[in-house]
Every structure is written in structure tokens, then in C-alpha cells.
Amino acid sequence: MEKPVSLKPEHIRDEKVKVLQSVNPIKDEEVVLGQYQGYKDDPTVPDDSNTPTFASIVLRVHNERWEGVPFILKAGKALNSRKAEIRVQFKDVPGDIFKCKKQGRNEFVIRLQPSEAMYMKLTVKKPGLEMATEQSELDLSYGMRYQDVKIPEAYERLILDTIRGDQQHFVRRDELKAAWQIFTPLLHDIDAGKLKAVSYK
Image (tube, rainbow, N blue to C red; front, top):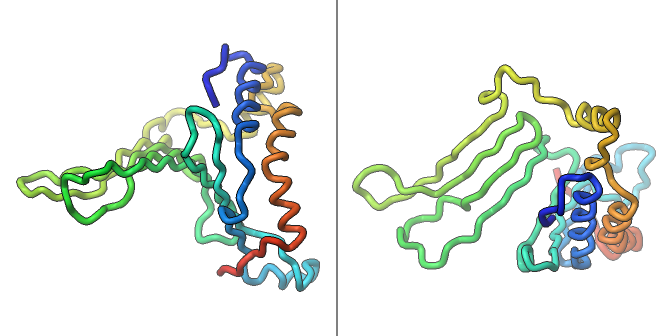
């Protein structure tokens, strides 16, 4: 979202709505759906169920700041790990002067759970005389850095906001409507069988 006029809850929520209203319609070819093996073993699930238990979706925001930048959302059940994070992957710079094997993308990661942290993955030149690179991390783990501070759980903050009458972290009706307008056509396509969930382990 863009910078709000002020930190008043309504101004923050106005900017959230603006960015949601700028999201282009989701393209079917930018959606991957999955269903974990064993999902249909539940006696309450129909044998022909196409209900996704995993989704990867590309969102594109049509505004001056984010034009051309894909936002890839992934969520699922029965995966190898349980985590919530935001990954910002930086574009490769044209004309690699090191001409060596690619180590991985430079990226900034905000891990929300488990173990809150922020870290940068960077391809850096190895110390020494050789012109070689390696991937390194700059890590700020909240548990290590702020050992004497109790980090509140997500709902603790919301309960405190409720007591204070601060609504900036709550969804307003127009924000909810804008979010549903992004995903409802996709949900209809899934219900109509136009998109199929592939099986995964």
C-alpha cells in the first residue's frame, strides 16, 4: 500500500482498499492447485472432490509502484514444514561481472512464524584473492536479539486494539469486498471444474 495521509486507522484502511482494488484479475494459467494424497480417505469427503488443500497464485497489482512485479501467494496443508513468511526476491542484475555459478537469488525474508525473524540472503564475494562468490545471510532473529522482551501473540495485539478502540488491524467492509472480488471468480472456476487440483504427497 502507499503511505497513508496519517496513522489514523481510517487512513491506513483507505490505502489497503486502494491497493486491493488495483489487483488485476487472476489468470488461470498463473494458478496451481493441489490436494494431498489421503484427503479423500476422510469419510466425509466425496470421492470426486476437487477441493484444493494447496494453492499457488500470482497476483499482479496495476499501479505505478508495483506494475510488473508478481506477488506469489502460497498456502497449503500437509506440507513438509509449517511456516508463514514473506519473501522479497530481487531481480538479477544484467551483466554478471563475476561470471560464476549462480548461488541463488538475493532475497529479503520476513518470517512471521515459527520464530519471528528478518534476514537477507545475499550473493557476496568470498574473502581472498579469488573472484568467487557464495551465498551468505544477515540474520535478525527476534528470539536471539530480544531475549528479555515478551513478543505478543497475534491475537493479543488484536484484543488490546479492541480494548483501546483502535480498528487499524481490523478489516473494513469495503476492504473485505475488494478482497472477495479478487478471488471469487477463481473460486467459481474451481467449483465449475475448470481448474483441477493435482495430487501431492
